[in-house]
Length: 358
Image 1 (spheres, rainbow, N blue to C red):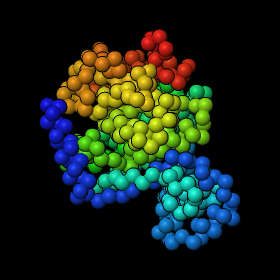
Image 2: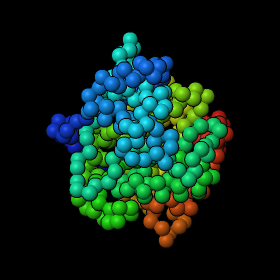
Image 3: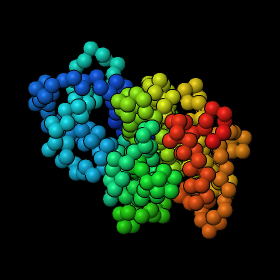
Image 4: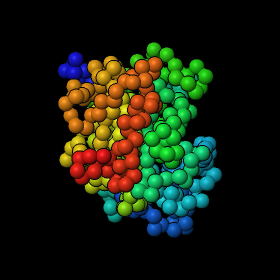
């Protein structure tokens, strides 16, 4: 089965890279390189841009501001407030490719397949946080969340809030929204949209086959920005279901372009579509995968599932809540197993202590 899926992933990824429309994301590996520029210098650069280019940098400004505070909303926010935070202004212009610097390696162009359009499809990939928990962060660093397949942004926020309350004592989560091709019947709850589900599955295969997406780029950029700006802090990302696939893709980007920061990243994957294992840059105490044996979709089809029961970084969660579907990563079964690892992160920035115990 895994050999067949491997071949299918490579085929779908190859087709995607050859025939689907591409866009690019400027991954900034030196976030503060343009922070020194004055208002006058930034205004001069901005005023020379075309309307289209201004829209590009205004959108980046909105993305970067929303990364910190999800109460910021509206596509016009960047246009209206572009010079209210000069540090973000400088970073927006730089990441748009409009600031000439001697250091030509501070931006890495990542090509990715664009999201195909469907009528009434959900929001685009973006940062968000839990507005009702704004400012409530761990002293050791940030915690983030990446949702799974088939979610509206509202539903992803609901799940993030539940995870925050059940395993993180109600702190804010700095999230990256993974959009879906599936149509929600009410604009909020998941659906049984077969066409959209099939498109989500094709995207999953493409990413596992080596393609990139803007979601993976946003996850990697989130780590780079926070850990560079806060050299004594750590970042814990919790990803659910197919969110694990895109988190794994973000790790690949980091391994290639910013490996020195990965020592301060920890990752918890819940019922993941793609399992993540320690590598040259991520040690055994920084990544844990959690899965139920009864979750047949994951145990049979997830990338890396052949290592369930054979690898120390895969934790089997007992299926005690039999009234729940085994893929329900919000269940008490998952919460009670995951929480001790989160508690360890709060203390040390790692999921496991040096003695290989919680």
